[in-house]
Length: 307
Image (cartoon, helix red, strand yellow):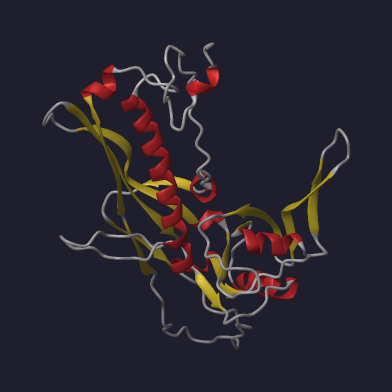
């Protein structure tokens, strides 16, 4: 009876393979989401404490300001700047690799320890991105971790109990910022809201490939009544099924928001406690909100995806 190569498969991995060498390709594919548009777009500054404060002031409303000739000067009630604060959150990721794992040869990598360092850095960036959107401020204690306030909980919000997001409703939200000296330029929206904006029929820019003049459907820039807005897809805005309330988005002037770092992300080596290498990544960051009126959040809206 001749040798048959189909025996290399059997009913399980490498079963009955005999002398046939395995064919393991030298790459590792990972299609987990890694995009962090808000983290990438915001400016970064250094902070020096776990509770960071800053000042915000405002002007009184304009008046006609008319005085009679020779009027005496009178005392005026003066307003002082108000203190605002951000709480610094500690982000960590731990990974331990045995000495044997370091010694053996791996497909798709030169070092398991190095591979885990890069992988955990990507994980931490997505964790920070989620917190910048959804974080709820928590002061923290010896047993409770401090947490930063993300955009959805830090900026002025317009809550809806199931209102459909039409172009008029969207512009009403954007133009609410006209009461303040801000220039909204960026929108971070989940996919249902982004597709809803794609369906708006006016004041939109669609990209066209210069080579063959094909129109690419998604809108990347929207010209609102308050100015031109760049649109960014965000996986960490609240999302709900089509025709269901619960979607969110934020419109911001990025000049009023920054990522504040007490400690930048860094890898630390832990002491040996056995036949393994122990590492952890750690960084401490917060969202600096120079003014809660530097942006607006839409909460609880129903997406209006055009068929």
